[in-house]
Image 1 (cartoon, one colour):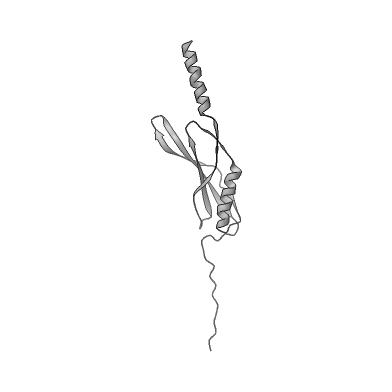
Image 2 (cartoon, rainbow, N blue to C red; image 1 turned 180 degrees about the vertical axis):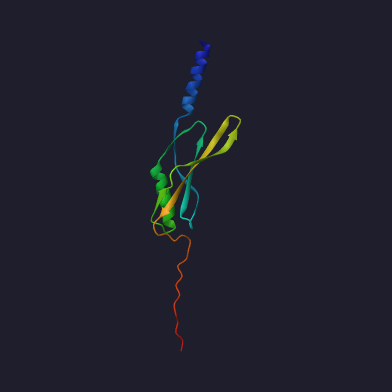
Length: 120
């Protein structure tokens, strides 16, 4: 009977620890010349993240707009990297999603025009 109570208490604690946690994307890298933006968020070992993909797209579009692009699209998928490993496993994971800027962007290049000057 005591084992059942202990097991029930452990399950209850794990259920509380694995509560849904809202996460927001923040810009963590990218390339103006390539028109790419990397957005990330961190997840703890017992967290069950809920992510607003529309918020991520909006952040990417805003970053692309500052570079002169008209929009952004997600490449698809995410990458995960453990940032805090312990003997119990990965305590913190960095989740990253990459976006491609779309439209006519500056792309980090200058528009140079030559003009001819006639001299007398």
